Amino acid sequence: RMELIDGVLVEKLPLGWFESILAGVLAGRIQSYLELHNIGTLSASGDGFLKLRPDNIRVPDLAVVLWERIPERKNVRTP
Image 1 (cartoon, helix red, strand yellow):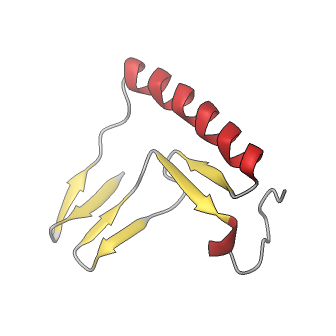
Image 2 (cartoon, helix red, strand yellow; image 1 turned 135 degrees about the horizontal axis):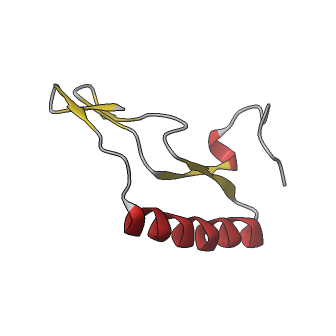
Image 3 (cartoon, rainbow, N blue to C red; image 1 turned 180 degrees about the vertical axis):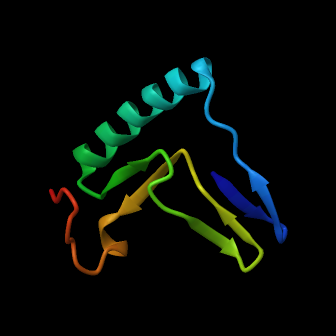
């Protein structure tokens, strides 16, 4: 996977063993919170891109997607 950082394409290395375990723990806790408060869902493993500025496009390992940010909840697990 590649990311655009300050206008330069940079290879994003895969998660290591420790980082994978940490991502799993964080994903479980964040998803539980989102479901409890019914405010959104969690996207994981580069399911999308995050454009911070025109010259910065990142591929997050975990990303919170709030329901209010999805105009039509198609193909999304809805509450």
